[in-house]
Image 1: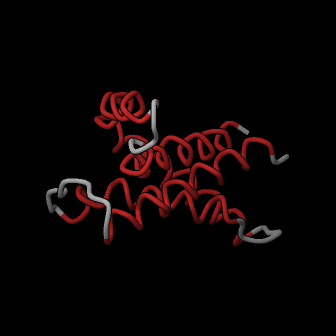
Image 2: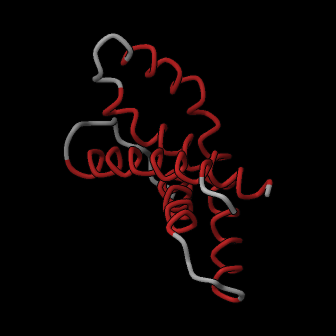
Length: 124
C-alpha cells in the first residue's frame, strides 16, 4: 500500500517537474509554479529513483503474479528515466524550451500528473 502511494506521488511530482515549462505559461499562477518547481528541482533525482524503484517493483509483481501490467508502473518507469536522463548519460541539461523534446517531455509530464492522480483514487 505504501509503495503504491510512493509510485503515485512520484508520478505527480515527477510529472510536475517535467511539465513546468508548459505550466509556467499559465496566466496568474505560472510564475508561482515556476518558483515552486525551482525549489524542488534539486530533489528531482530522488523523485526519479523512487519512480524507477516503485514502478519496477510493480512491473515485476504484475508480470510474475498478474493480473496484468498497468499503465501506472509504465508511466512511473518513464518518469524516472526522464528525470534521471542527464545523470544516466552524463550530459548536461539544455535550457527548457517550447519545442522539440522539451515540449514532448512537458506533455508527458502532464500525462504523468493525470496518471498519478488517477492512481490515488483507484483502489488497489
